[in-house]
Structures are given as C-alpha cells and as structure tokens.
Length: 90
Ligand SMILES: [Zn+2]
Ligand SMILES: [Zn+2]
Image (tube, rainbow, N blue to C red; front, top):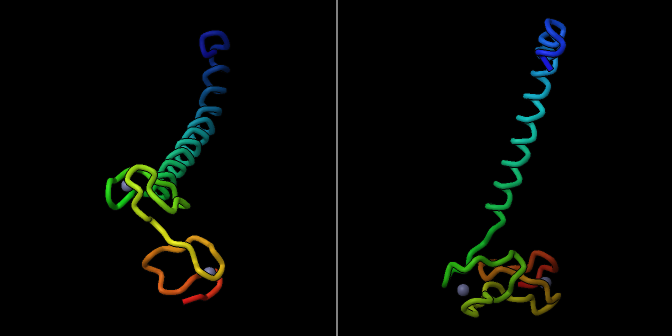
C-alpha cells in the first residue's frame, strides 16, 4: 500500500497504524483474559489430578466424590461448606 500511494500512503499508514495496534492489543488482552478465566475455572480431582468440571459430583477417572448434594434442595455443595448456600441447610 505504501509503495502504491507514495507519501500519502505513508501518512495513511501512520494514521491507521496506532488504531490497529490498539485493536490488536485489545484483542490480545481479551484472549489472555479468557485463557486466565479458563485456568481459574479448571478444577482437578484431588486424588488423581484428572481434570474435572466445576459441576462434577464424582471424578470420572477414579470415582472420588468431589462434592455432595444438599439433603434439602439437592443442589451440589462442596464438602467444606458447613451450610448450603442455596437454602441454608446446615
Ligand atoms: Zn480422580
Ligand atoms: Zn440446600
């Protein structure tokens, strides 16, 4: 483009470049954020380190119980919670 348009092309390039760079940086930041979020959300079985999803109740690999269900509302709850956050059942 610069070779075809000469000085005008150079000027155009200089005007356009910062915005492109910002867009690229923005896109990269978004990508990194998504990646970080994915890493944060990833959970691993405490027994076999198999990757499990946040709503898994049992590890599909070694059958370790990862969570239990509330006896009152039957929602998944973590072992270390001493109260159900959904219905208040101790
Ligand atoms: Zn496991
Ligand atoms: Zn509950």
